[in-house]
Length: 286
Picture 1 (cartoon, one colour):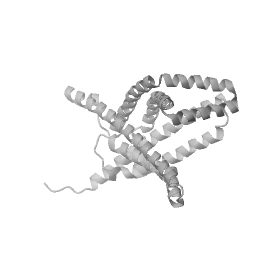
Picture 2 (cartoon, helix red, strand yellow):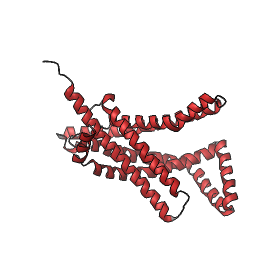
Picture 3 (tube, one colour):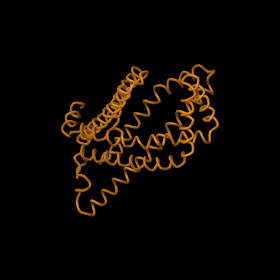
Picture 4 (cartoon, helix red, strand yellow):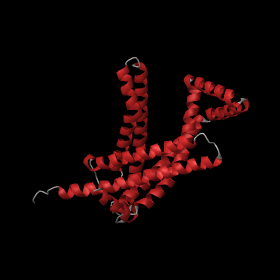
């Protein structure tokens, strides 16, 4: 089954689709980073804990790197705080648009993998307009659901950290929470994310029995590639030279390419499983 999925992967030129997805993913990173800065500014503006943490960080920077760097960072953080509300709103809108474009092209790629016609040549003029509109709606719905899943994951991890601190005197609970937060939690979140993508992106209706194998395979590939990226960061993270910085950007792009290729190979594996299951299902006599 894995070999058949690989044959389909090569036959559909899925590796070239993965390279195109890296481009759209990099574009989506720009408003995401702006949103991150805006959220940091809001936290510094309205959270006493974040303000105290900021002062501790600045004191540590002053002690290790001197007063000029502290003053520079203070000015930068003040600018982030003053423009945090506007930056957050603008970055949210930009992230919504770029992420919607990303998922729209993912949907188009899955249509190509499943040998479905593109929306612009899907039939009559009414069918083209309806299909294009539905594809856009589905892409933006996926963005909203992905944001909700991301927030739920953050709440879950925060709850685990709170429970760990609250029950820290109980060694069994502390160790179980640590194992879940460090290993099982991320694996479950990644596997669930892949499974939901395989359910939402194809043009046909899939069920959990069609996607669990692909989600498991892609999760294993994700863990291996993420550990390789962490190893690269640990190996060259202490060196702050320009070649190493560009090397880190290249490593990030290669990792994104690997993840996209895993996603499209998983799509081919879902197609193979779906074909086998539907062909093996006996049809009722007419």
